[in-house]
Image 1: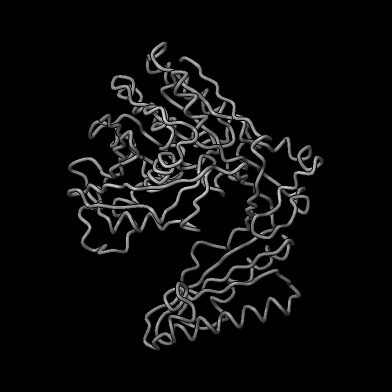
Image 2: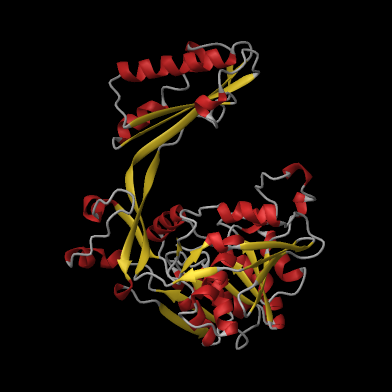
Length: 454
């Protein structure tokens, strides 16, 4: 039976710069998937593009491509990356320039999948009664329309499949599902039908397992984490997929980390939601049907997956401005570190109130005492060596937030003793970008696939 090897080399924008190159260099693969995007990433890229129309994509992708493209062309490895962000055209142009600089003109075809950015269509959609209601609160988008910074549809695997059918070797997408990066090669290579729901669900779950990179090879793993070997050289995941929808999760020989059923189960639980209805644009996958088998060392066989028909909607990821925030911290040392930190919190809050400063929220954390577990942590020991007093505020009034940033430093001399940790200066006022999930009928969206030869 035909087997294809789909490697993942990035779990987010900021992941290891070495991982994708090692996936190409350390053993045979057919596809390299690179997942750069998260909800907050889109708004960051939107800001970058507003300042410079040539920006708005994952800039790390281009120097990486320069490094791996010669080997990818030689070995016919196809690269699928959602590095395009909110500006896939600019990312494509930079990739073309890199290919030509490497002397690969006429040897590589680069495609973009665009059409996901609907910022300039929002008013038309709203005027026609497509309210883009918040999936969590049911509020219509109109309530925050003036604050919207970005709006992008999550396309699935099929536009990527179309790019592959047009001969693209490097595919750059805007916002698409993380799972689509892995599912698309399976559809293309095995010629799966659009209504073969079980196989589409299998490819979707394969994508879900590897989408966070080394998180399924032992990174960020709770099970026996101290015994996971050579994490400094951790291998990133590879899907060995077959036509019947059965696949194996593995990694390159000689790399660190661990792949077994326990580790894979942890990743399966990540952002799962309703286990019977994991909804994507391509299908609905039933996680309760997943069967795992430890086939050999660092090889987990996944099979038995069932799926159901896709819905008539795409998800839309919308970001909008929601005021300002600032976060500052001080460190209090033994003796009575926790008592001093709590006193600093009371003193600072009293001073903010006496100044007439008003905030939508003030949040205090005592790192080292109970920041992670809250009340479940119980009362900290009086012998605790040090506590970080961290306090943040948010408000639509930037002036009040800026004034807050000036009130932390004085505690160094006019608050509780044994304080340190303010060498970084005043906290920075930052704009808050909030997330607005919504749905849009698939009839209102059309992916655009363009293939260009270098």
